[in-house]
Amino acid sequence: MKTWGKSYPHCKNCTTTRRAHRARGYCTRCYPLIRRLEIIRKWDLNDPKSLKGYFRLSSTWRSDTLESVRVTRLAKVQTQLDYLQMREEQLTGEVDGLDLESAFNHIAARCNRRSANLFQGSSTFFDHNFTPEQKRILFRLLNDIEEACAYKAPL
Image 1: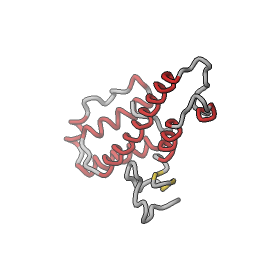
Image 2: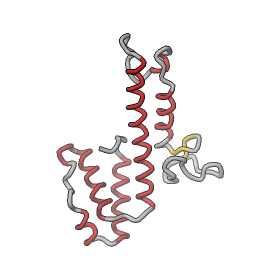
Image 3: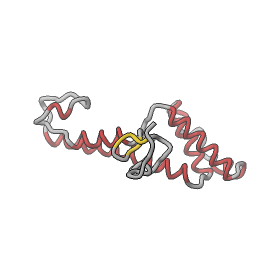
């Protein structure tokens, strides 16, 4: 496992030290997303190789169509990076019932779309029945479950 060094004490995006350093100051979770951003920014209709692996180039594509797709894809990847950053902030900060409710709902939604709001309204229950330390432990365990699953952007 690559460790964090003097040049990069933590990930430049999410600030984690929990995951290994991958490259250029990013962790194993953020670096592939950073690379994807770089590749999308280089898309060029005049260079079909720059589009490889993303979609088939149609002969009817225009530059404004490509730009629309580029903007959408960039926003999606940036949302994933922002989510990783927010999640690390939650892991190092104070956890409340609403954080737990959201984490439970997020995992439930990944199991079954109809279960997306299964824990709606549970935040008060968590706040009244768990100590701050218990909430922090529970949140970290839920995070471990989520990280063990294949990554998907938040719903």
